[in-house]
Image 1 (cartoon, rainbow, N blue to C red):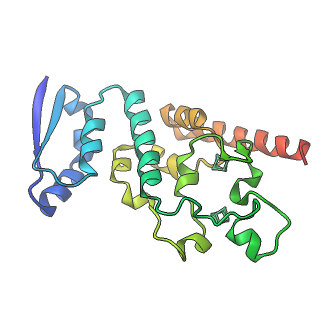
Image 2 (cartoon, rainbow, N blue to C red; image 1 turned 180 degrees about the vertical axis):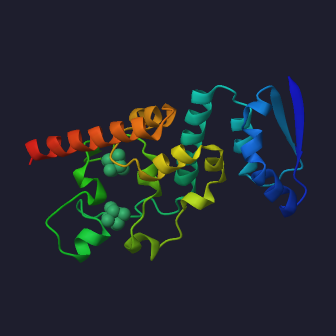
Length: 197
Ligand code: SF4
Ligand code: SF4
């Protein structure tokens, strides 16, 4: 296997490296092991780890889990949605009779919160939350640049789904097939909620 040393001495090197990710993740670097030197940015190490995972599914799963962990680690306030007696900031402000915030329409909600790990949901914050806290945004997670355009769309929009299903959507090769799977699950979710009203 060839070795590619990635030297990050300053911001300029950092941005050059990010700009080259498209080529580094391509077939031309399939037999290349990346080694990072002089790096002080914590975002780079996971990107290099992902580049060194040559199996497509394993790389996607690593990126997905790493992005979820990064969001969790950046949260300074555990109750960012301000839940009190099951109602979030918005539901209390609107004096709504509903509970469980955005999760109220999802199969995977529970009294203890979300029972799965959904990246799109983790990235979503309404204006009530963003006006109170500085939150991690999609653009802050550089490792997501390693995903294809189709998969970037999916991680931003695949709400109300369990981790295993999102990963299968990401593994699919076409957006059409992933979209059919997503729409089918939304429909199944809707039916489940109708039955349990
Ligand atoms: S994101 Fe906003 S609407 Fe959704 S649960 Fe949090 S506070 Fe409520
Ligand atoms: S998958 Fe999303 S909408 Fe469903 S319970 Fe988890 S965080 Fe809430």
